[in-house]
Image (cartoon, rainbow, N blue to C red):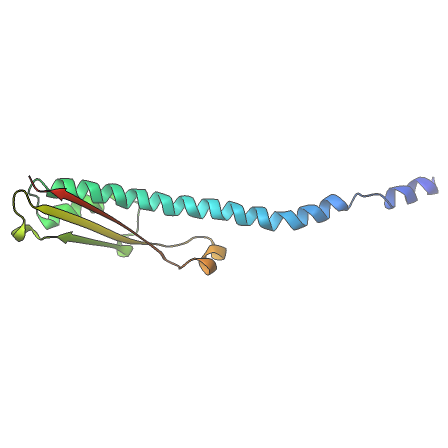
Length: 134
């Protein structure tokens, strides 16, 4: 009986626990990176689509305030304080056949504290769309 207990104690039972303790931080770092990348990519897609919709709306003679309102409606899930909308040229200077440029800058606040140390926090992204005024 004593021999059985000693042979069990000398086994490799703790090896898997040590391996798990070594691998877990790496897996958590990868998981947080995937989540953070998804958040940044989602924000980029939102401002890209909002920029396109704003430029399309502005190309059919919408005012700057109407364009900004459309963009704010399209980016409802983003923080409005981090959103910068630039419309060029302004409504008074647009001409038929000319171009309208809608540019959106957004600063994505990072969630994971680890990535906030590696990447700039908030992370800047931007989108620009140019269309012909009809």
